Length: 126
Image (tube, rainbow, N blue to C red):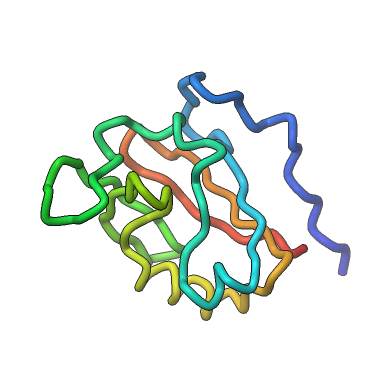
């Protein structure tokens, strides 16, 4: 069996460019701390998300609109992005994604824009 071909890194758009559906908007390499605390950073490509999806530091401030994140076949959740930390606020699904995929430090999370309020998360082995 042949190893999968990694996605073309030239498919990642610079910040400020509105991505088309199905476009890789960014990648985040996982660290041990990401795995321990159930998050990955979106800061390098935060501008690719709708401004309305970026919420206050505390969820109770209620300033943001939710986006849908597809974590795998049949698994999705609604979340916003924490303005302060620049990661998806719903870390329970991030944790489940890490567990389901067997994510390790050095692996890369890839985020694909499916529609303006829908994103798909995948894992690339490091």
